[in-house]
Every structure is written in structure tokens, then in C-alpha cells.
Amino acid sequence: MELQWCNKAFTTITGYQSAEAVGQRGTILIGPDLEQGVHLYIIEKLMNWENFSTKTLNNRKNGEVYWQRMTWTHLSDSETGNHWWLCSIIELEEERSEPAKRPIESSPISDQESYARIAKKVHRLERENARLHELAKSVAKDANEDALTGLSNRRHFEVELKTWIENLKKDGTEFAVLYIDLDRFKFVNDTLGHDAGDRLLVSVANILRDLTDISDLVARLGGDEFIVMKPLGESALNISNLADEIVQRMQAPFRYEGKSTACSASVGVAIANAHMDDPEQVVADSDAALYHAKSQGKGRWSFFTEEMHANALATKQLASDLLLACDRHEFIPYFQPLIDAQTGRIACAEVLVRWSHPTKGLLAPAAFLDTAASMGILKRIDEIIFASLHGALSRFDEAGVDLPRVAVNVSSARLADPTFIHDIKSSGIDPARLTVEILESVYLDRMGDVVQWTINELDEMGLTIALDDFGTGHASVQGLLKIRPAILKIDRHFIQPVVADVSVRPLVASIIGIGKSLGMRMVAEGVESEEHARLVSDMGCDYLQGFYFGRPMSEDDLLEKLIETRGKFWSPRPWTLAGNMRRGIGQAI
Image (cartoon, rainbow, N blue to C red; front, side):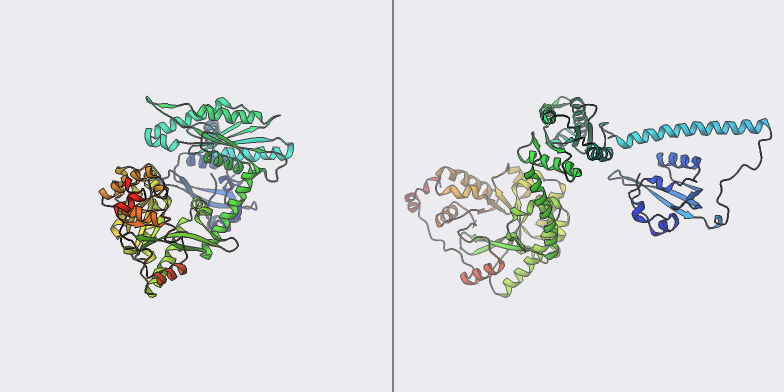
């Protein structure tokens, strides 16, 4: 039990400053002059989660003795299962003038009966003391063990890590850290249930016990994350062998109540050696190696390298720069036109975020968006872009140019964030001029209650919903029916080869047919030539987007383009079947 917060009165009474107390064990509240019986009474009540109050002598930080009333109130959170104790300390004014001494027995035991009564009481207290001592030992054991697997828990691991690092610095005892994460744990929980997930975690714990030595430390950090600390010994070969064995053993099918599923593991390995400037970094290094193993396909292990170290430093610097960029509003919208295939006029502009970096220039989303998502700051970036869009639309209107609507991409994290709806409403953008583009993979992977609620709210607000990059994931008609997007965007990888590769056209035609049958308007992405535009337009696409009509451009460039073209980017012309046949295009239509 550690102190997490204290007020100014606590400092005045006890003499401990907040910085000295917060993070310390609860025993800081127990002075040397507090009676042992009272101490044991406090422990018992705390262990039983009972609210209680006691009046006792205690000590300030400087050793001064004073009378206090200490009241303990149990607090808990039913949703998270977290528990706290609120301890209130009152200095008793009426006791200040009394001498700070322990009560002394004023009269000797005068007869045998009194002696027997007191001896019985002492014996009872001794038994109670022994019981509380065993209870304290049990609590200490529980404090160091993971309740489900019996392995060391995160707290015990962190304490042991400090000891191992101290031994490294003092004696040069090098060791390895193996960071283990299950690749498909969520799938097991979702398909077989949480009981199966618990059984799997226990099974993993048993495998790790079987593969490690008594000198190793094996811990469960939480969720499906485990860690092994192993002395390096004379060779690193035993470390690589252990990583190999963990990966191999974890590839065996997991069976639960007659059902079987695969759940592999990825492992990151790092070595804490005597030459390191910062041995405490070894856990972060193993985590970076684990991330690399997962990025390479999972079900494998990876050793931490200097290249990963450089990448980690770069990511850390990027994270710092991103926070400054949010404070300085360095994110700006870029626009790519969507053209009406029938009129050739601009129908919409897709908004693509750019980072106007003070030293590196203009950065595309690929350079920073994944890191921003892992930091949880996509909401802040969205707020900056929405504010810019509101101003941009106003300037377009004031200039008398026609930009009917803008389209914004929504990440999976933001779609699952209930505050996303509030951010759109507070942006001041007319919902009738806003399209929200959802990646196909988002709704397939994250189609939970919150996502469904967000989509319904967007629809009720009057926004247009588009499904982006259709055909790149594992889409189904059932999935389309859940969202019912007004617009379906065919991924550019299907559109780009349609001119040169006749075999692709029936597939594109089928996608268009599915969308049309469900009442959706179709967008062809990746249009890069006149022939592209005419072909996909003739196949039934309602809107066209691609470099042929313009690359992503700044607000000023788009405004200039709209003024120059009066909003018309293309002149559709009738295209005869004979003309198509001559070009070898009509065969697939």
C-alpha cells in the first residue's frame, strides 16, 4: 500500500512534505511510539477492508510525540476493481498538554486472580500477534505474486530488476530480459470466452516455468505480457535457445473444452551488460525488440540492435516534437479534388493532414501519424484540422468559389472515441458539407457498440459516410449493410491497372455492381490519365479522384485552382462503343 496523495494539513501535522510522502509505503504513518497492539489492530482492519477509527500516540517526522485520531475509510471502483484507503488524521487539541509518555501500570498485581486474568490476556494477544504475523506473511506473498498464474507480478519484477541492476553495476553480473507477448490473445478471449483466456495465461505460465531455471525470474506484467530475466552466464547461446523454445512451444494448438485454436507468441530479447551507460533501459530495449518481432510477422523472436536503439531515439524525439506541434498548431490541411464524372466539376475535396515542421519542412502522414496514434493525440490533431477547415470553407465562400463539401479520414481509434461526435459538432462545420471516410479495415476490426453508435450519430447529423479503400481488406456485403455508406471508394490498386490489364476490369465492374445494387455512389481512386477517367466513368463510377485532376494541394493552391477553372476540372465527352473497341477497352464492359 503506497501513499498516492496528501493535503497541506497532513504536512502540518506529520511534518512530512508531499514529495517525501507520496510513493512511500503506508508504514510511514506508523511512528516508533505507536503501540504494537494498535499497530496490529490497524493491520487487521485494513486486511479485512473494514472502516475504523483509533485514538493513539504517534510520532511526527522529527520524532515528537503527539496524540492523534486516525480514521480509515475504504474506497473502491466497481468498474475497474481498484481499491483505496482514505486515511484522515486529526491532532487532538485536548491531549497536547499531557506528558508524551506511555501509560505505566500504577499498581502491582496484588493477588493470584488478577495475575491469571492478565496472563490470559497476554496469551490471547500473543496468539493474535502470531495470527497477524502469518497474515502479514500471506499478504506479502500475495503482494509479490500474480493472482492468476502464481508468477511474480509487475511490482515484484520491478523490485527484482533494481536488485539485478545493482548486482550488474557492483559485480558485473550480466543478464538478459525476454519480453513475451501473445499474438492472438484477444481472439481467444472473443471466441472462446474469458475463462479460456485465463486458462491460456496459466498454460503460458507453466510453459515458462518448465523452460526456465530456478535462478531465473519469470513474471506476468499484466494482460498477456510476460517477462523473463535470466543470468547471461558464459554464453548468449542459452538465451537464444530459450527464445527459440518459447516461440516453438507457444505454436502448439491451445485446446479448451473440446475446441482448439492457435495462439503464438512473439519475444523481444535484450542484454544488460556492464558496458551500458543506462542498464535501466534494458526493459525498454526488449520491448522495442518485441515490437520489431511483431512487425516482421509475429510468432518469432527478435534481438535488440543498435538500429532499433536509433529508431527508439528517433521515435522519442518525434513524440516530443509532436507535442510541441500540437501546442503550436503546426498541422495544416491539404486538399485533393474529387470530380463529378458526369459534369467534370469539383464535387468534394479530400482533406489530408500535413505537418509543417519548423526544420524538416512539410511532412506527409506516413512520417508521424502512427506515432501520434500510439501517443493518443489524434484527437488534438483532429481539433486543429477541423478548426482550419472551418476557416478554409469560409474563405472559399467569401471568394465566391464553389467547393460543395470536404471529406475527412477517420482512424479506428477516433471512430471508437465517443468524443469524436462532440469534436465535429463544436468545429462549426456545416454537416451537409462534410463527408467522413472510414477505412474498410476499421469497421471490420472495430465494429463494436461504440463504433456503431458513432456511425449512427454521424448519419443522424446529416453527414455523408464513405467507405474508403474498398477491396483491400476482407469486406462482406453483410459488413456493408451494417454501415450503409452513401459512397464506396474503390482502392487505386484496382483502378490503376484497368487500362493496361483487361483481366482486372471484370473485378472492378463487379465491385461497382455491388455498390450500385445497394444504392451507393462509386468513387474511382487512382485516376491518372484521360483514358483512365473515361473508362471508369463509362463503367459506372460517379466520382473520380487521382493525380490526373490534381495532387494534394494547399488551401491557397486549391483556391487559385478553383478560381482559374471555375470549378471545372474535366470535360467529359461522349465515348462510343466502337471507339472503346478500337482501343481494346470495350471488351470488359
